[in-house]
Length: 272
Image 1 (cartoon, rainbow, N blue to C red):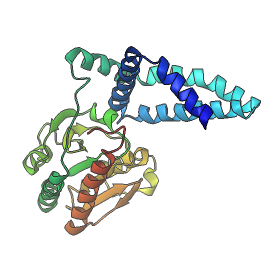
Image 2: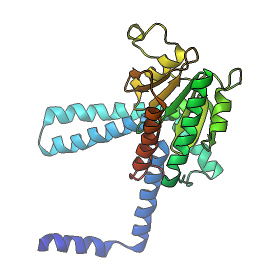
Image 3: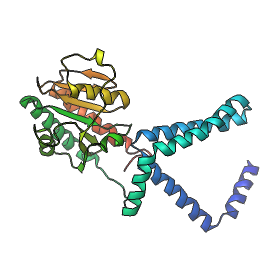
Image 4: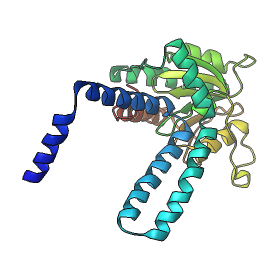
């Protein structure tokens, strides 16, 4: 114990204020970079490479030579792949640095959750009664930036008036999905991948339902679909479709979705 204390004292004695500022600056830069790439599928790949790096250190200490050799040869390929995968994020980061937005943060309030949930539910209920097709996606832990960017980006407050206008037939944004990210309508008219298991989906279901299932096969998003033919409300989650939801059930699910996002925002690498 005394040896450890002496080592720590030696380390801190040799550290100057410039060193502390230098470490803090680099740490903050890494933190902001991780915040920036959070919300993309590439973020999960970065975490995977981090796990491989930790395993590499452990296997070297345990003298697992074969495993260590395999991981050592896998890492360079992984980092090279990351450069390719992160190309859109890197380009966007450079653009945001130039515009001075890289250091900005987004804020949200837990008090507004009931109001936002009510606005979404009003839209779903109105679309169901009028038999207007609707597709609303809630981003959860896995980010949907890749899909947001292929739509029309809005970054607007959640109101039933805006959502109802988006889903109004024959309007420019009618086709595609609305993606809700945090406490904002991130984008509309977003293209989503359809399910790969077409044979397991009922034949009477259209492209909206198939897209809802498809996005939940790739991510942990929660999706609500209103059928244009029947006005029936459905939920897609984890690649499974639940049809014939009541509004009471929808209200609970929507409120829970906002609550989960709000809780995850308190974690280290989430937007505040």
